[in-house]
Image (cartoon, rainbow over all chains, first blue to last red; front, side):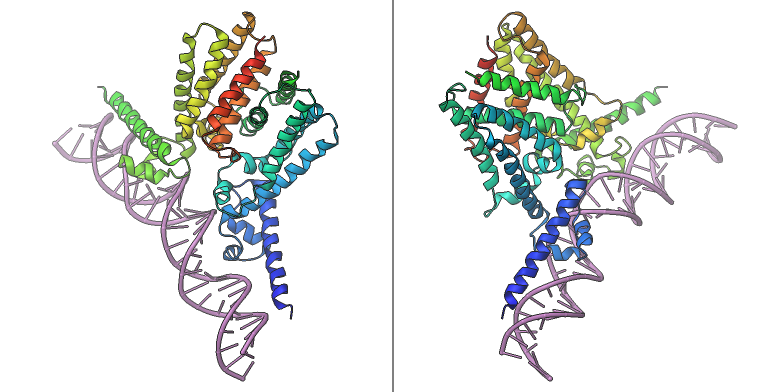
Length: 203
Length: 203
DNA sequence: CAAATTTACTAAACAATGTTTATAAAAATT
DNA sequence: AATTTTTATAAACATTGTTTAGTAAATTTG
């Protein structure tokens, strides 16, 4: 009798309900303002029920963290249609900032916040998409070097430079540390910064 | 009679006691784990007393935020002894990361956390040291360009590139997003990244 | 100096949080 | 039909930041 299978299905159903509610609240209100009670109310269960499916609040947001990386990886992957690895690299820069500013809460969770990382310390965590995205970058750099399109520098150093620049711009903007510039000016500055960085890598 | 003067002095004394206790707890435990009750206990006053001197928790940490920028500006300023603006710029890069990794909690408060910014939105906030540090960077870039040491690119774009790279490295490391590299390897990668960036700016 | 007033301080309460526990209801198995 | 297992929750706990109402002390006034 498929009773255990059905129960498993039901359990998974509630789990995804929790995740859905948590994601919706989180994207609207942010991490801190998303409470366990709020999530519980949204799915019409008691708060205690959530703890039957997730160890704690951080574990829920670790799951959302993973979802974010899936979206992120998908977005970066759209650049793969571009044959020229140099132009592809340039496009990935745009896509990166696009993701960051279109999904600032996701970006926050994925690259800035400390909270979900605590859960991520434990075993069984899914760093897959994160590593995959980083590999995407490194492989593109490698290809560009091999084809003689950019200078022959250490791939990891180049990757660190690019990722740091991108994250620096995104996170400083999201966390409002670019007060010295008008908000409307920032996108243009960022575009020029990426252009310049790319030009500097060019042979 | 100097009674109002004395009272003012006493008020300022308590204020700095609060700040001192808050700073100590904060640097040891971080923002979230530093509670108003904890601060109150340390200075042997009731929690309510703190609210006679600060509007809320964020306002306390805005003050610490300012202290941090003072330390930061002081540190960056030590590079001023270097005549050559290119070498000075290079030194400032090292000093930046040194500050970040020697004072990760300060760095967090100053450049990553959202909390103290809320208080900083209001009028009367001291963005001075922050802007001063940024000016220090921009002036050094300007000088290097004028002396023909680095390429003639827009100063703001160059500043954004440099600051973003530095903050990217610092914040990704502090918030543990460089899991793909050994912790011992990171400093070397960062050094190479700064070297490369500087080389790229060079004429 | 005594009375009135202002200031300084705090105990207690409030509202909200994440999380745990003891218990009841429901479902499945025997 | 009785027993066991699963599922869900109400209520409690321990914290948090913050507010309020009331008291004690210091200062000013008459």
